Image (cartoon, rainbow, N blue to C red; front, top):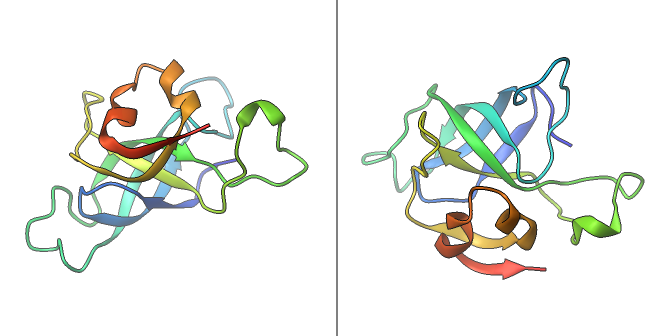
Length: 128
């Protein structure tokens, strides 16, 4: 469950390390976002090794696709598949194209049923 102010980990090679959610998708009074949805984020910190040639800078506002969502056991549904231990995103440009060329770690299979099928091709593996 992602909401305004949530800190998220970036799992791609765009150069960002941590981002903060500043808006949760489209819709009237929408408060929470889950895996496979788009949020608007602000870059809070960069990776040390990629600072000199990073594709994003600190303070940039970009869109992000949620790929892993940490949830309580109360809110966990069997249809979601996995219970993740972190909140993770992939950064997108203004035109909803991937900024990065690689995705670290697995991506849940439910991303296959969104319009971001390319995330599975860029990732190292696919989770049930």
